[in-house]
Image (tube, rainbow, N blue to C red):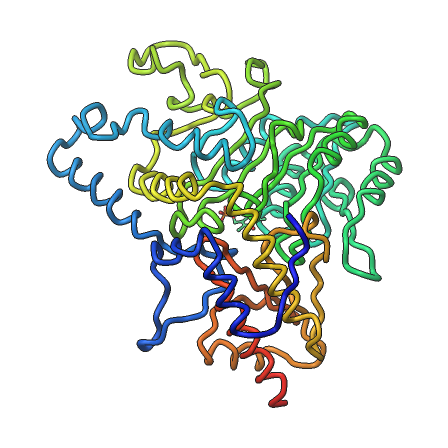
Length: 423
Ligand SMILES: *Cc1c(COP(=O)(O)O)cnc(C)c1O
């Protein structure tokens, strides 16, 4: 992709939209309207918008349930028994994994705990966990509670990878240093990719190599990665990853999450795991009296038969991703975020704390307010923008390639500019 020469004008934004092969996808989503006014929605990193297809797919399951009752497990148009399998190929492609490495199940934090049951096996000597300093609270609570559960002390055994003061960026050299300083003591590295607060993304392969070279296992939380960046999970050699489907994956509030277990662990039946019947061999699952015989690969970690209505929403969204092509989505994303950065760059009183290199970020830009405060954000909201505020002074803006246009981005920055001028 050549360098784009951006221009600060509505005409330029409209021209970009006219040339955008994904432009028509905006019409396939419900864009929120408040008091009759269509909103500029930049909050897809928190809750993705609803594809039109979702209602159709969910309605289909409601109809099959109404007409078939329990027979829907085998006779529904998309039978419920193997329903999760209908999601696997599309999901695997988006996160760069083999289908056997991926399963949609439970929710993110639940999956994180299940993965730590298998991949956090502390010993007296090797028992520490590294997370990034500004990790998402749920991840922090989950790892702290796992450390406690094993009888250790999070105060001593939870290590924080800190961003550098001068630019807020995390450096892998510092992660390496942390591993060296705690030689043979780190059991697990768990990193959010991208970091939810600053939007910085990481080289997953490099982090996995670093961890493995120090005999630590490595997992990633892709809550902000799945459907946003291409994490190439299989090639990264990460041991596991988890994510949710309601942010960039547009599958509805609280919808079912995703889980990746690298192929190298697929046959390891000696790993600790919390088991349930949905993880059992499909051939004999309904014999009901068998010893637990886990399915090979990620599916072997399933617990329960899944919520079909939520799975239908995921199937709808993944079909949209499939049709648009994730490669095209990412390509537009880089341009669209580049445009937002170009327009914001020269505004006074704000600073973008997300890295400038497109390879080190997804679509989100985190904007720090230098002097304005939460009032500014409230005014922005009142002017018809849905974005997201993080204490103490950051607005996160996520232009989503499937349903945000270049014109949306231009209009957003016009609003920000006029509110900053007002002060
Ligand atoms: C959104 C998010 C979560 C939310 O977890 P749930 O279990 O889905 O409620 C957890 N971790 C990160 C990094 C997130 O961004």
